[in-house]
Length: 254
Image (tube, rainbow, N blue to C red):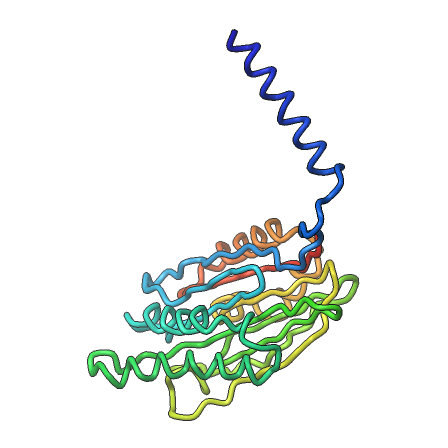
């Protein structure tokens, strides 16, 4: 009896699958949907103090890296990303200026928390943020503050960095969130086509692997999951002291 029931259920699922894939779409039902399909992970640094955080949504990806070497690094990163998510930049306009305003909101969240609490004077964070604007001519808007990096891997072309790291060998990153009253984030826009890839990495990855090795890994053309695994293998070989976050997203329209 049990085998008979299971056979009926499997048959019903098969019919539903065929009808869903091949049947006529009803008026108003969605068809192709442009989005970012992403995977990410944070390789935890050997010094044992969390500093990185990231968020992945359908059309928004962001990563933040709190100042390394402090117990408040992860707090700063979480404050920055909380402001980004609350600002909903993927729904708040399509201008580069709109994304700059989102970065400014993250900056205020980090800085105000430090000013209100004397016990948290060292709240500093980086921010790398991308937003997909689908439309008839899809594009990515990006905002960058600090020493992380955003890379664009156009289909069939070599990977190229979209941002310039604001690097500092010692101390907090220049122009980091919360560093000073004024903030001048790097913002920009790049066209994107189906099959293109965008990658966000925090400074822990950049320091551990270097730009040349990152270029080689991104050129291999593996799936996002396989590419992330390769990054983890390389990071495991060098054991970075600080957190190292990688988020890999492909632009798809189906």
